[in-house]
Image 1 (cartoon, rainbow, N blue to C red):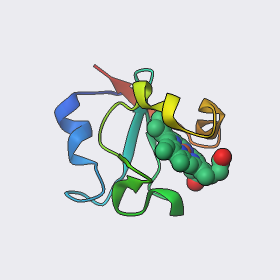
Image 2: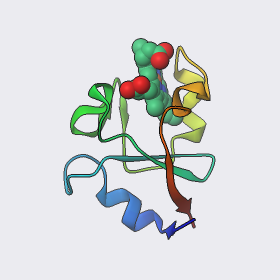
Image 3: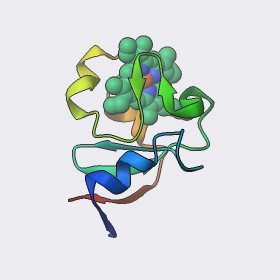
Image 4: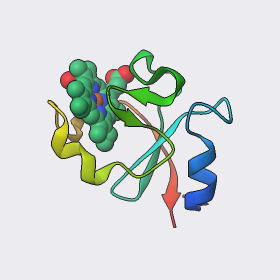
Length: 75
Ligand code: HEM
């Protein structure tokens, strides 16, 4: 899989570039198509970073990532 740095991920925050990416457990997902991640914002959470630690705040499990194809690894 392709590898991306934190800086590359940070630019895909829904503000600086058209792509919207989120990392979970080191794997990067493209959530650009999701209406729940419009402009990079998902409830109180922002795309462009690894949100592994924040999943605990969610009313759902990591199963929400199953429908998204992993696009790379965060290095
Ligand atoms: C206050 C915290 C959060 C709330 C209230 C919230 C709420 C929701 C709701 C209601 C959905 C759609 C229904 C469902 O699939 O259960 C959803 C989907 C999703 N959530 Fe969260 N969430 C939160 C935090 C997070 C965090 C921290 C992440 C990332 C680690 C995340 C990633 C996702 C993803 C990827 C989807 C699927 C989007 C889609 O299917 O289009 N959520 N969330």
